[in-house]
Length: 147
Image (cartoon, rainbow, N blue to C red):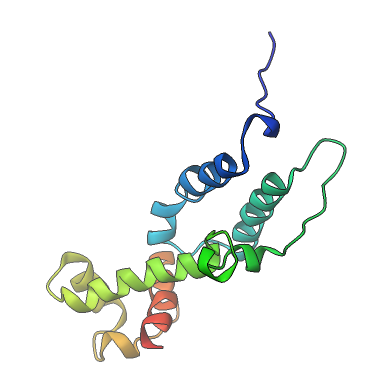
C-alpha cells in the first residue's frame, strides 16, 4: 500500500498561509480555552509551522529568513499574522476569567468560588495549595486580565 504524501510544492505561499491558519492554529483552540498548554508544546507547534512555511524537507531545513515572532506580527506591520500560541492561550484563558466576572451566578463560578476564593474577590485569587489544572489555567489567564 502506498502512502500519498502531499508535498509542499503543491501549495502556493498563500495556500500554505491559509492551511496553517485555518487548520493548524484552529485545532488546539478549544483545549487552549480550557487549559494552559505546556510552553514546550506551544514552541514545538510553532516550530513545525515555521518549518512547513519555510520548506523543511527530509534532507534538512531550509533557511528561515525571518524569525517566528516577526511572522506573528500583523500583516500591516510586516508579518504574516500568525498567532503566538503562548499569548493566544493566555488570551483565551483571560476570556474565561472575564466570563467568571461577568456571570457570577454561573455554575462554574459558584464551584470555583467555594473551592478557591471563598473569602476574597476573584481578581485577587491565587492558585492555592492543591489547585486543579483548570483553576491554575484560569488564574494564569486572570493575570492577563488584571494587567
